[in-house]
Amino acid sequence: REQLIQSGECVMMSQKAMKWLVKSSAGKLMDEDVVHDLLNPYLLTTVTELKEFLNRGSKSMGWKIEVSCSFKEDVEPESFTMDFIGGDRDFREFLVGAVCIFLARWMNFDVEAVHRKSNSITIYLRSFVRHDLQDKAPGVSKHFGSKDLLYREIERKPDFWVTLAELYKKFDYQRVNLDKEFFEALVAGKLPDITKYFEIKADRPLREIPLSELLPLFKYLVVASQLVDDVEICAEQGKEHINIRHDYSEESVILTLIQLFSNVFDSGWHNFSVSYVSKLIMFDFSLPDTSKRDAVEVS
Image (cartoon, rainbow, N blue to C red; front, side):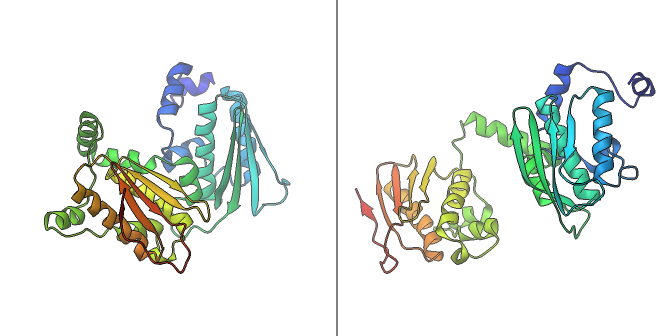
């Protein structure tokens, strides 16, 4: 350990500062060149070698993390699990993320699932085909890179995102997020078409998205746009409905919102009735398949 510090390869810092750094970078994927500095792909060519290296490093560096695998050491598996037990929770998460990036890049294993406990992390890995070395493994991105896009966009356009954050905070998030086509349609007195946003996010036509998937997607996209205050959904079969809470007082605005949202469900070929009262719009999908969409009801 002393030799690593003297050589400049490692530095000594307080545990509190280290925890802050690690925790502050949670959700961002480590750059591959940094991963390779920790895990040399030319020295670690099998999962067994990787496991042994991590355990040696844990002892010498004081990580207090024990690593184990679920397969026989003489057989290279198609799928397996790795357990990381002990040590600091945030550093353990940081280390597991780096290991998963390494496994995806050099051994073609992606993360299928992650099971986190108070003192351990178990990762479930499965072999996958990586068509482009520049592509990130989807499982690694899902489980360890939830904020990676955000971090990298902030780094790419820091002035824009800082200004935007300041505006949202100053107006207590009472701002609407619109793209240019949406804004242009509104200014021209037309009803914007928002169906494309659902199809882009789902990567398929609206008519191919079942209602059980469309309702959570609707909540995700509409709340993110800040068009309304909140969306409550019930996706239980036979009881599907949506309650949309907003802060608009002009009836013409409310009716425009209703038409805007109705077009989404019409395009998905879903039967529904819709009503509204004060600051609440209600879509009810618990209708027989043979029924027609009811006219808007005012309560």
